[in-house]
Image 1 (spheres, rainbow, N blue to C red):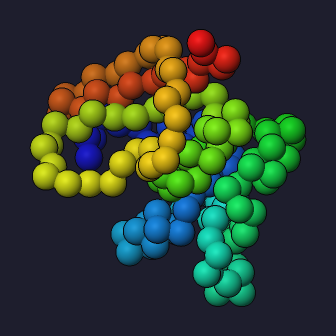
Image 2 (image 1 turned 180 degrees about the vertical axis):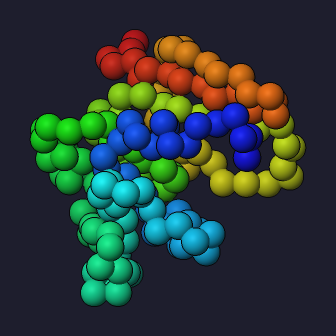
Length: 149
């Protein structure tokens, strides 16, 4: 973590946080249940029970497409999808992702999880912005290009 990253300002951009079950499990082990104060957290899972997690919404919508399409039609702030590669892929395929924000962290890993798991199509992105932090982290922002040929 870089202390120069203003997580309060970042999270203030969103009123809804979407995540898959594995991301939710990881956040819970770190003492975080998802979104912040005033944010709705939605966890996509076929195994979690709503009664066990009253502070979040458990969604069973396969791929999240119908729910996200409904959320996008409502007034409010932006929606943040954190983690959940399969969920990300399904929303990207449905044309429901507008911006991709990722970070390059100066640590070499010998293994990891793919950002976009197979099978997936090629998606063209257009560079929008970057922020460089003292730790060497580079946060990158891209717009999703629609109807790219």
